Length: 492
Ligand code: N01
Image (cartoon, rainbow, N blue to C red; front, side, top):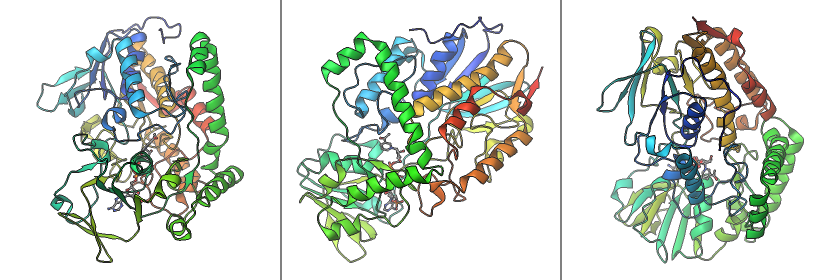
């Protein structure tokens, strides 16, 4: 069960850490810090349970579109995944199990939202909402990306008299079976919901503003025999991990950052898949007019089948307003509904906010990021000493395994923490020059990516720039291997 490599106990094992968030990244940080010998690690979680996005999302059809055998901590292989892309509840259980096994779950300070963290006099003063300020040496934010739901800005949303909720706040007290369900949005979430409920709804009105490219990806069950083989021989799991990671890195991960040949392959697969839709009119409505993978690619081999059912109507007329009985579209038609689900996405650029972060000399993160969210290699910000982010700005959040990303970022952060723990430095932060250089390189490289091909998506920040990692995965691995200390200001 040990995750630690052979490490000497830190000279300053008493360093105080605030880990903010107990989702996938926060659990990881807490486990790794404790394994490294740090005794004072506090984990703050604003909700009453851990698990982040896998706690919040419980909608029908929820699954991860990254293969399960790479969507796991490296130190906690799981032979029991039931499908190639396992259902959401299984992932949530996995995170819970790991957090329990490593003694983290019981130590999380639940229902504790951090309102403010201020660097003052060489320490971080961290204040929970309505709570007392506590002192820490190091702050690690692990607050996720797709956390706060966005409801559509459509007049009358509150007028609807039936159940209405966001996909990430699914209200299970209302059965959708046999009902007239309205579903707004056609992102990854809505596609999964459609595939799951189309057969049993009374009628599904799927409101599409923009069609999506959908790549057909099979999701076979992992048989008990296969699971048993993995249980007996854990090396098989490691081999599978390497195989899946390699395959992804050499295909799709390259396609989105400029490998035209790979992108063409994905495009052909999507086009052939779309051609399986029989009704030409429906096919026309489902045909995007932008580059494949410009928006986050949808992975599904069931959506086109399900959307062709008699129970489903794809509505492409603009929504004019929402009324007490349903959705009124611009053609004057009222789509009468019993319940309405908004699968309308998340605020993907908030990071730890609304938490207020105040760095050196009273400089706030809000000021620092007033033009754009910029960090040094996604993990640190100048003027914010001993402050590290997991899955911060420009992390590779496309269709990658975010667990893998988090682990690499943590390894990088840990090497900086080691400088403090060994007594070599009291404060560590990236230089402004290195941070600017990194962000300039990001902007220069972005022109080669598929995300600037002219579509709108949650990848784009408020300036219309993709908040993504514009290079291949190997470069991310290389950059996360070891900090270049010339790029840091270390204060002894
Ligand atoms: O959200 P989205 P999502 N009127 O932002 C539409 C991850 N995820 O929850 O395209 C009408 O992608 C909007 O329309 P348009 C994954 O990273 C992962 O689906 O902007 N429509 C769009 O269709 C994913 O990318 C898994 O024109 C409105 C939809 O709502 C991310 O979550 C599974 C509207 C929002 O799509 C977000 O996906 C599920 C309006 N006013 C999700 N406002 C895995 O398998 C918005 N829309 C890991």
